[in-house]
Structures are given as C-alpha cells and as structure tokens.
Figure (cartoon, rainbow, N blue to C red):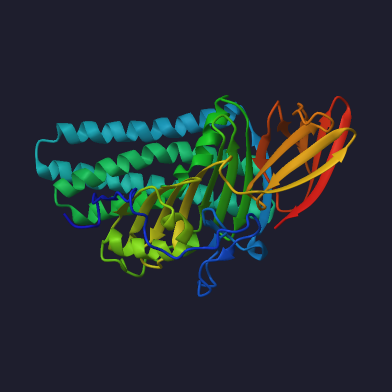
Length: 410
C-alpha cells in the first residue's frame, strides 16, 4: 500500500523525547515570536513560540483583520439547520451504501463509487464555500461574531458526516483499484479537516442547550482562529486554520515518510517535540494534496497539527491545554477590602481571575467583567476566560463593591 491513503505511522516516544531545538524555559506569556524568519510573506499565519509552553499557529497582530467574541448558547435555528445538513449527508451516504451492496458486478460498484465521489465532492465544496464566505463577511464587518459562529456550527456538523462518507468511498475505490476516485475522495476529506476542531464541537454542544460557550475569534485573510474555555474540565481550547499554507502544485516533500515530516515538526514546534509524551503521525491524502497529521501530548495538554506536504507549512492546528498547567504572569490590585488577582498569558490566550477577602485571604464569589462584558463568576475559586487583545479592564464585583485592574495583552 502506498503512502497516499490509509498508512498510519505510530511513534511511541514516551520514554525518550524527541531531540529538538530547545527554547528558553524562563518567563511566560507575551506575544509569541515566529519560529522561522523565512516564512512566506503571502501566508496569513506562522507558528509562534512563547517560553516554556506549546508553540501555536497565529496571524501577526498587524495582519489580524477583525477580532471579537460572542457567548453562544441554545440556538434552535442553528441546531435545526445543522440537523438538516447532517441528515442530508447521512441519507446520501446510506443511499450510496445500499446501491453499492445491491450492485451485481464490479462495473456497477465502480459506477456507484464514481457517482458518490462526484456528489460528496460537490457537497464538500459547498461547505467550504459557505464557511469561506462567512469568514470574509465577518472580516468586512457585514456580519457579527454571532452569525459567523452560527455558520461555523452548521458547517461543522454537516462536514462531520460528509467526512465519514468520503472515507467510506475512498476505501471502496481503493478496493476497486479506482485510484483517481480514491485520491479525489481523500483530497476532499483533507479539505474538511479544519471543520473538525474542538471549539466547533463546543459551539455545536452549546447550540443544543448543553450550556453557554464564550468564543474568541480572529480572522486574517481567509484564515480564522477560534478559542474558548471549557470550564467543566478546565481546558483551554484553540483552533487555527490558514488556507494560504496549502500548496497543491508541489508534491509531497517527505515522500510519504512521517519520520521525515517529524524532522520538520521538531523545527516548527521545538518545545512540544522536546517535551512530548508520545507522538502519533499519519499522512492523509494523495501526493499533491497530502497533509501530515501529528498528535502530540505534552505536559500542558495536547497538540494536533496538520503539516502541508508541499509548502511544508502548518495549515491546521488544534490545541487542548490544561488551564492550571499553562504558565502565566500574575498581576493584582486591592480596593474596597477586595484583592483582585489576574493570571495573564496573551491576547486570545487564557486569563484567570480570582477575588480574595483582603483581610482573611479567603476567596469570595465575584461577578467578573472583561472590558465591560460579563464573563461569569469566580465561585469559590478562579474564573478562566479567553482574553481580548490590547488594553484589558477587569472588573470584579462582590456584595456591591467593585475592584478593577487594567492591563494590556499583545
């Protein structure tokens, strides 16, 4: 079997971490520095490094076209639309499976596969176009974050079922030696990877009433960054997609070898690879549209990233990080017998807020606002949220008394 399809290469490196380029472990927070100064200027994003924690894919501050946030909650219209899209894809898939099972000859089966790839490719193209249009409209200011996130929710739910059907078709095409159709199904599947991120899962759950999800958004070109905090399990979720990193004109630079691609990962994500707790890697897609998927758990969480094999740049990245493990810088102030303590990282990163009785040091339950927007309450512990970029005013109110702190996050 060649490396264009179902090859999976597992690298179990829990005992001996990958040798890589170490980063300075001193200091935390602040804006990241690009890992490579030779990055293509036409790309919307680059992988940035901050000390002693995971590198991350992001646009430079100057390239961000628009940023904002929205608290998504129960959305019947979005849930219904997402259900309809998912059901349509499911019905199409079931129809194809039934026709394939009933086919009497390989020629008939080939006809089913060819028709299925055509129909699902059109479906995938429609989903990508819908998402791309929403991102552009948000960047231009013609829609708000609420409408953008609703569109992403619907696309994500529909795309999930479409990916499953494309994978089924790819397997059947391979069995029937239909290389062109197998490659096309794999290409379409790769093109839907950005819709499968952890923040979109939070949005889908929120739409059906599982609880509110406050999501931070940044756009640059056709690219997008989403970030959220899952308070239930204390996790910071982040996903970034840079379509400008895709290069379908250049064949796989690693020849189907995850080991060669891993050498590239060591240069792009030195802290993660140096501190890995095990790595799994697999090439996905045909030679000219292949990406390498890496899943790398590390002491602060887990990185899932997709390296374009032609451009050798990261095109999709998902992060899941433990909030209590991420390095932060602490700033605090006291007023009205209350002590406000704020743990900061960077704009778009997590921010933790706790409020204490200044006399006793005991935590108190306070209502928190970031730049005037309510984000929740501290309870008897700490409230985590996603920080906006730039000047940030944190207000904490307890028993009618308010304490405020001003800071700035790049």
